[in-house]
Image (tube, rainbow, N blue to C red; front, side):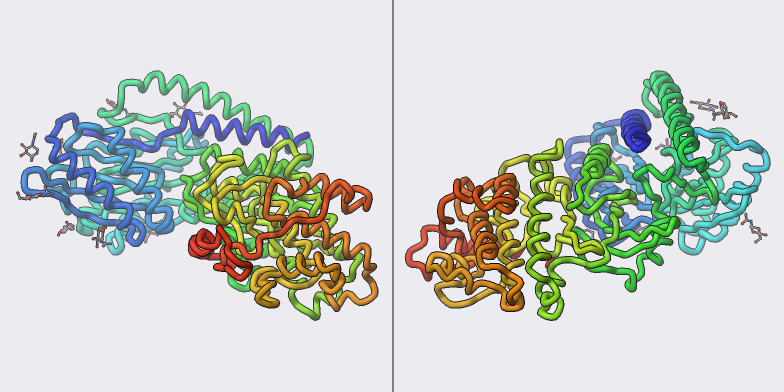
Length: 635
Ligand SMILES: *[C@@H]1O[C@H](CO)[C@@H](O)[C@H](O)[C@H]1NC(C)=O
Ligand SMILES: *[C@@H]1O[C@H](CO)[C@@H](O)[C@H](O)[C@H]1NC(C)=O
Ligand SMILES: *[C@@H]1O[C@H](CO)[C@@H](O)[C@H](O)[C@H]1NC(C)=O
Ligand SMILES: *[C@@H]1O[C@H](CO)[C@@H](O)[C@H](O)[C@H]1NC(C)=O
Ligand SMILES: *[C@@H]1O[C@H](CO)[C@@H](O)[C@H](O)[C@H]1NC(C)=O
Ligand SMILES: *[C@@H]1O[C@H](CO)[C@@H](O)[C@H](O)[C@H]1NC(C)=O
Ligand SMILES: *[C@@H]1O[C@H](CO)[C@@H](O)[C@H](O)[C@H]1NC(C)=O
Ligand SMILES: *[C@@H]1O[C@H](CO)[C@@H](O)[C@H](O)[C@H]1NC(C)=O
């Protein structure tokens, strides 16, 4: 109940922050036009900058001939990753064209980068006019004392910054800590960097007196301070806010903005008070802001980056559990002692888009005993971190494909695993209100809890990473060689029946203990699927049995599983059973009657293969193999 409210509120807060705190970007545009040649050069220059941003936090360059030449530079805040820098600059380049359509000079700031251009050379020249100050919504209780601490730390940082054009530092203030950052564009001399920062500091009393946090945006430098270590990736209780004195060049809608902002502030305030109250009533736990870091209530899906660093020993290699589908996975222990697995993914989406957050919240709603529970998440720059329940027995592939470990997996256990998997997938396909196609079912995505119950992981990820096309053709193929249905591997067509195919492969792997990928028996049985199908047709199905199963396995049960596996991997997606029929067939032999003999599976997906005589698809197969191997940097 409480969780639902918190989720609702989180969505609300995000929506509001997306709509009303949509700045950044902040921009200053000149009103003078220059010719089309200049604008062509500008386009070229802006297009080239993101590629430089992938390796450098600062770059200045120029483009074009004498009078139409355009000079430009960008700067990313030093603490963000190169990937985040590249994304930020790409966005900034787009925004500056949109927001300053006919300007001969402009500067624009995003959340963690800035971009600037002009028709005259401005590199190494300081222009400290037109700074923009942005303050936070909340005020401190002792503003005078606070501002003097802020001044001191910023002055100290200004002195330090002359070496690297960058400095961060912290200073205690009462129970809190002030975290501050200063940075200059690298074309400036040390002296000009100091001058720029000094003039930015002078801006503070005017824009931001008494506010708990602020930033000043200047053409050649940047400063910011908060009560939480934003430069270590922590996210604050609220986004930077807009009670601000936009520069003279700001658009005329300022007063309407103020209204929206006040309204928003009220809504936000109410939302936060609600969250406070509910957590307080439920756990008698206060909503702390100890050490200035945002500590969400226990029920909130947000977990701040700082806590995850602590939980994983700074993402140390010794905590690494492995490399999952979309990024590395670490084991962590949260401050409440709970063991978790933390998946670290890089995203292309800009910091926490509303759509992405909504997607995560939806995935968190999926609750089934055969799905790995998603406990929370964190968005940090271009990265997102997903926090899952920890599965002590590891993944199925490790167990299944190691003879020593597999020997301990008796028939009963294997049947339980098959049954649990079928139920988990059925829930994704039909029983949850969201129809989710997994798209990357495989043994390494099946985790086992301490009782060896199977739980499916990585569900919903394909949707986030490959878009929302639904059952359609998709340019992005996520999937793993050996488990991909032919229609998916070759044409990018996926549906719930592609998951059924992958499930069929898993069933055959579980009952044989052999991997489909890399299996080769003979020329006529180049894959596990082909081998199984030939044995089945020759009435010799029991020969497929994993010898390690011994007598624990009854022949009729084994053949039923094999039959179900083969029905699921039929080449024609339409004749594959649905997961609900699979669950029925597993439970009840008589349900098998409705399905005839399994038709031929694809003998090899993505391998050139003309062994079975002329194959109309063989050419396509070889092409798709190239495609498939190219897009599979994993496993
Ligand atoms: C563009 O800027 C250059 C350099 O300031 C100037 O010489 C030129 O006349 C301008 N062109 C137009 C069309 O304003
Ligand atoms: C910047 O990008 C341009 C064009 O992509 C390239 O020629 C240049 O070498 C890059 N410079 C740096 C410092 O990365
Ligand atoms: C970058 O700016 C410096 C001056 O600060 C200048 O010497 C250099 O030529 C510029 N680089 C480019 C590629 O224009
Ligand atoms: C620069 O001038 C030369 C000769 O006038 C011309 O061929 C070239 O296209 C111009 N380059 C750009 C980027 O405008
Ligand atoms: C600084 O930039 C502004 C806007 O481009 C310009 O109007 C002003 O003259 C510049 N000041 C100096 C000292 O260059
Ligand atoms: C914070 O202080 C400013 C000026 O000192 C005042 O205008 C504003 O209303 C205060 N905000 C809050 C939330 O108290
Ligand atoms: C600033 O530097 C002075 C002298 O180096 C030091 O005493 C002071 O504590 C520093 N203040 C802050 C806020 O870091
Ligand atoms: C806000 O900006 C206006 C000009 O737009 C200026 O006159 C005023 O002094 C500024 N106020 C503060 C508090 O900086």
